[in-house]
Amino acid sequence: MERYEAYKYSGVEWIGEIPEEWETLRLKNVALILRGGSPRPIEDFIAEADDPNSFNWIKIGDTEKDGKYIRNCKQKIIADGCAKSRAVHRGDLLLTNSMSFGRPYILELDGYIHDGWVCFANIKSVSPEYLYYCLLSEYCTHQFDLMVDGGVVKNLNVDKIGSATIFLPSQKEQQAIADYLDAKTAEVDALVADCEREVGLLREYRKAVISEAVTKGLDPDAPMKRSGSKWVSEIPENWDVIPLKHFSKLITDGVHQTPEYTDEGIPFLSIKDMSNGTISFEDRKYISYAQHLELSKHAPIEEGDLLFARIGTLGVTVVVKDCPTFDIFVSLGLIKLKGGAINGDYLAYCMNSDYYCSYIQTVKAGGGTAAAKYNLGEVSRSPIIQPPPEEQEKIVAYLDAKTAEIDSLIEEKQEMADKLREYRKSLISEAVTGKFKVPGV
Image (cartoon, rainbow, N blue to C red):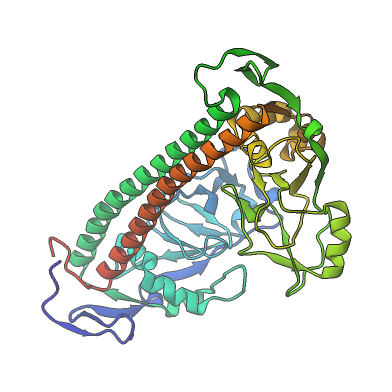
């Protein structure tokens, strides 16, 4: 990349130098910075869909992942709500100031915003497109992180935002940088999308491999018979379909009331701690040993037990292996197997297969709000395809190897996507701090 002819110290140690002719300005000097407002209770101010006298109510949910513009909104508010909110206009720039903290967008519609937004209006000396990339850069986000109020929920006031600095080239250079970044980030985004698409295909393939093995076995020439279950048409002749309860000595769930958490003690897990076929202790909470003794009377978790999701992606199942002592919340279910009744690893593969997902979707269809949870009775009645014990072991060995191979490919694609995202961030930051000259400058 071509560099500028002369540089000067930026005044920021970790930024270093910027081009000699660039200015350093505070955000309050390039725009009027205003916080949104929310009429409350907001439900009283939401307009009917066909109300001709309503106004756009722009929410963070109206944004697109990695999007630059807000072009549409899903809700509108009545006129009385406008007086308690903040008007914004096409060409203004919005910055998220709540859960998805510090993400900029350019408006392509007029409307009103709630207090989870900050608006940059009356923008001067800088093009909205260039300002967008400045706010998206690591340089600005780092400044915001240092200024932030609050703990779990990050929040910035407009005075602090206004005190942040950006580096400003000429108007012509601003446009050239914005155009360059539009093109380059689009290229990177397309490559990331390809990686994500391939990850999705690999995950589908993984599930298909599991489903094929647990419904048809490993012998393509094995004689087949009607299964007698509507969830799978045929199974090998010497296999059976049996309700899960016949293999289990206990099917239960975790505690229904939130326990009192402690700074250390016994790990306490919920659905958020189980994903992609693993149990994670990384963000665990703790309960006291005394609470553990009480909870373990109801749901005593041991090596070889199975945990399954009762909310979220219903039925996703993990075998407890090499874990410390822990307890679970109601969002997780527990299966304790009868000795020798069925291979636990095989059962987990069954419960993570397509046919089992179809069972859950069917029994939960039309269930209203109750469908949000996988009931223990439904788990107990769920159909499990049972091969002979020696075939279960062979299927587990085959699937352990095959899924490990697929998981490795998925990890490679995810790492590639992460590196592309990091490159995208670095490219933006270097462009808006003048570390290189973009073409056309």
